[in-house]
Image 1 (tube, rainbow, N blue to C red):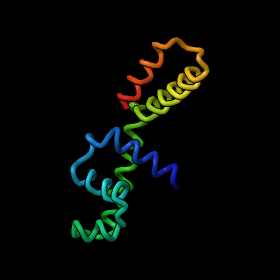
Image 2 (cartoon, rainbow, N blue to C red):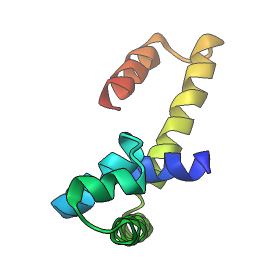
Image 3 (cartoon, rainbow, N blue to C red):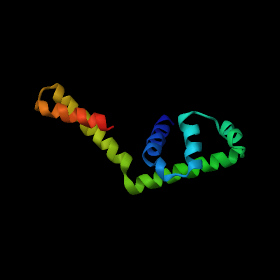
Image 4 (spheres, one colour):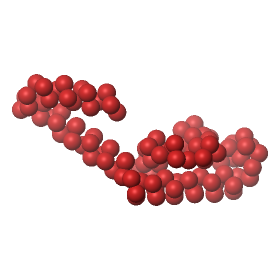
Length: 109
């Protein structure tokens, strides 16, 4: 469950600009602010089922965006390469300039 929540949070970070304001609001409250479905339904004066349906449809949309654009997949691969480079830098097997590049990569995250 935690893995799925983490994945949805990343997908939301990458693709939230493609969502409607209502979708963004529901997702932010549910995933980032940890509101319950009932709390969201009270906030927007809609049924709990409407909130649930909207969140599930939005999750599906996020997964579809990822299937087409692969931003999260590429992000994870970059993170892995950076980690491997850092391990090599710690072993002093890479030139000092690589440390500068790694720092620049971290600043882009």
